Image (cartoon, rainbow, N blue to C red; front, side):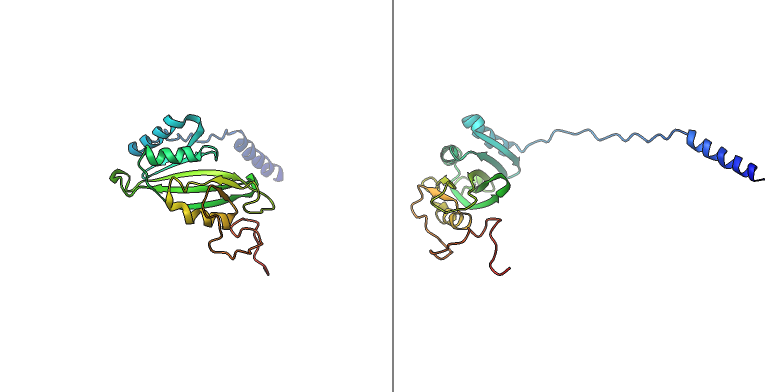
Length: 199
């Protein structure tokens, strides 16, 4: 009897093993090319037409265009944005610390009060400065050219970036601390390696 039950078990095993398993083929939907907003695309194309490979268009989307540029070219690109595209002020300036890249990125958000077609537009202009491991703000290589002579509104923003991230702006008329005490001797507080004392 045991041989019959063993026989039936082996028959079942052999029949299940011989059946090929086929997975259903799932068709992926065709990827349609992303259609960029026309107005914003025209803005980015004008900048690329003027500066070629000196600029990189990071993104183009509704009401937003981001342009990455080297620190050597940021002044010329900003001047063209003001004079050629009619953007007239910087709304904000922010900074990002990238210790793994040994760089600090400074990002200008540029808008226009005077050109109605640009009322909702924000042009993001970004550049990077070398990041020092042991910063001495103003006396190390973490420097960028100021845009204060192009956009007056960056005056306090650049001062804040100077004290919070240690980026010194060459040509800025007032590179003094804005929020921290003048005798601040620690790392700039928005760098990722800054540690609050006692924690």
